[in-house]
Length: 447
Image 1 (cartoon, rainbow, N blue to C red):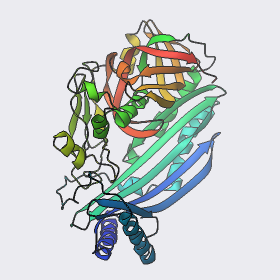
Image 2 (image 1 turned 120 degrees about the horizontal axis):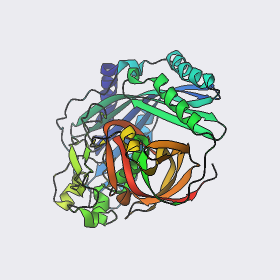
Image 3 (image 1 turned 135 degrees about the vertical axis):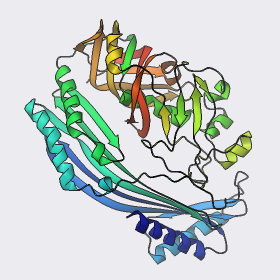
């Protein structure tokens, strides 16, 4: 499939560039083949699949630039979209941040495509879901969740001869086991669908649901909190979004304004931008077509750098590390964040805790203050009291209000394994479990 898709993408890009001889042109093509099976109350109720294209043409005239988009790839649509971009460009003001289009670059070879994931069928998803649902049924619980698989392709080309292409697969299985207000949850995300163990996920969710019956209230206050990887991922999203964007650094709207090369977090915290890690498997080029470079973002609690595009790098006098998002938006974000593991585990953290709580994951977290990264959200699907080295009782969910900087400054233990986990609003990060001290629960919730 990948060879045919590569040829198809190259053909589209070359066609558009050949049509736009009068102006410099950049072409960005997304192709996404996605399939999803959704289940609730122990039965499948939705099965959908779709293949979609998104084409974005950006034209440049001197210091002016504009874009036009379409989801149609017929000749009339290509001509119309290109002309729309040209017409819009003529109406723009000069943009002093606009740099010339880059020439062809060299990219590191990556292999993010798994045939088994690409060809995973509705029947296979249904059979896998049945295995997990049967575990729920045996325990008089209702299982709900999704099983999805997708193949995503990106092609970037320009009129100076640059062409970059990436194809990757992704599979995600999640399950929530419920009995009234009691619930347990687990999620597995892999590029290779064959690495997803639905029965393992089902057993974890069921065990947490059974443990969650008859929860008790917890008083607001500061506690030692054992966070599973999915809970840790919630805070990584905000580090990505409002922490290491080089444009935020220039504008002074990130903690890096005063914290670069100074100790901000716990010395136990080491964070890397690791695009060529096979578990993460990011693309090898950014949205200017520049090679993505690995980075050390935090070393022993000290922020060491920020992500850049070409203009940000020029403005700040640093080497470009290739993290542009599609221009003309001037921003750059990490694509592939990895947290260094430690020597502990969730089991050891529980054993080492005299009084604290265990969090499975968080729900609906939102930012309050971008400078301090103060955020708020709620626990969900497995929240337990830990006393004298053991889980002693389930707890009613709580709202937290705390700063990401404070959270990662109070690390006591870090797990010795890491897994891909996503936050409520997306992302996918390679993170371990963590034990955090002085975590602030601000109030109870209604669920």
